[in-house]
Image 1 (spheres, helix red, strand yellow):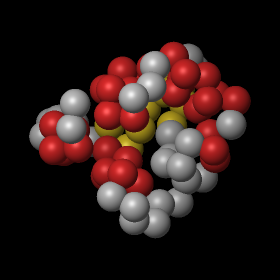
Image 2 (image 1 turned 180 degrees about the horizontal axis):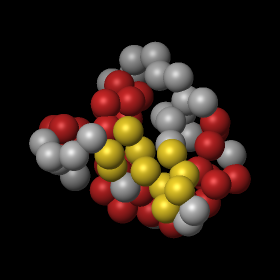
Image 3 (image 1 turned 90 degrees about the vertical axis):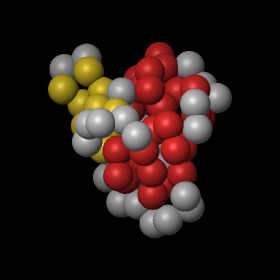
Length: 71
């Protein structure tokens, strides 16, 4: 998956499964980090019970090296 592929996803929110290939990571690793230490991810996350959602625009900014408020 490329950043261009992520930009074409037609929603405002991404899932760990969608961003994991781009980050060369496992989706469960992203979920665990989001629950245990979300500030260390570098991009913001929203947690709803066991679900982790990632705001697409903030994630794209993070990937482009732009400043993102990860809180």
